[in-house]
Amino acid sequence: MTSDDLRRALADEGGSLRLRPLPTLAVSLLTELGAPPRLAAHLRAVHDVAAQIVDWLGDRCPDLDAPTLLLAAALHDIGKVRHPEELSGPGSSHEDGGYELLRARAVDERLKELRVAGPALVNALQQLIGSGRGAPKARKA
Image (cartoon, rainbow, N blue to C red; front, side, top):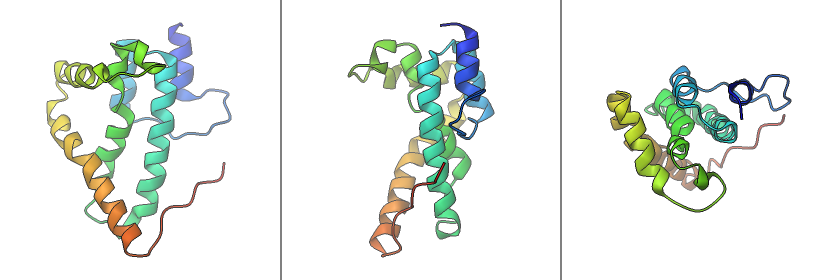
């Protein structure tokens, strides 16, 4: 795969998916690391779903740190750059690998926030669903 393939996966140029762009930090890291295009496309899809959930939560969860949650979604599998076999097979080596990649690039402060972002989102969703206000509906393309 070429860097053009990665660029297309990050930007969805000419594509019909209309996914939201990844945060700038995620794009920079994926580009710097020469991420496989398949990984970049996956991270964009997960980031877009996370953005839909964050949009739906809106005023329901004023304490939700949307930028951190969206960055977490955009970087959750970045360790697969070091463990590409886990793109198509089982494994968890990418979890420690991703942490080390981020740490080596001085993303330490954001890492502290990312460790609480996921559980915070799950907790907010559980509270909303348990309150009878329902779950988000899928966005139409």
